[in-house]
Image (cartoon, rainbow, N blue to C red; front, side, top):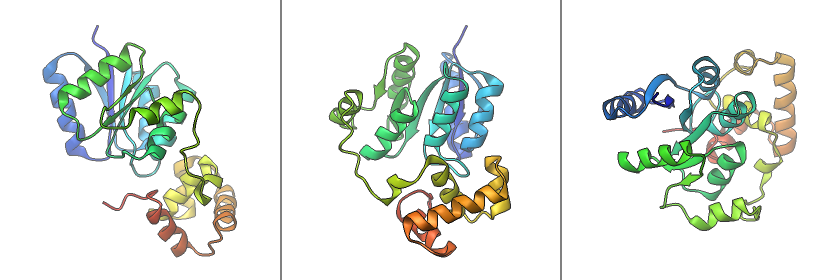
Length: 217
């Protein structure tokens, strides 16, 4: 049987293009796709794929948070991150969340196929353009290169709320997306303002954009 794969990216053209290429190659069965982190979690549970090809920058819930939740709920699923980010912080965060591989979007199709095969074999993959030293440092538990900042003081849930605030969602919508109460959203918002020393929504939004939490492209 062909390995089952789910494609997760917020760009329809990219999802459709990858599906066409993978289907034409005949080595994988594309069983589903998703446009954001929340849909990715649902697709993982619904389709039970062997591997998920997942973008890191997405609306509603980013790829890092989605990886962590998918691995928590369906740990046997392999996840290959497909991203434009070369920064050490993103790489370490992806593997820390549970990613099995890290492939850059400017890689050619053959490299992506190689990455999928390596991850499916149970090994870890990282695009060669990304420093090998970064991955080695992570695997050896030497995470000192991860720069501390006010962002590091936030919990994962607070980062998710900050992202949604930055994308312009209201408290009730955030509560619905994250399956929490509006009261809890308000508490997270208060914690964000206290930890970041920011006291209005506009400034929270500006901070989220400045830190790259919100994708403006």
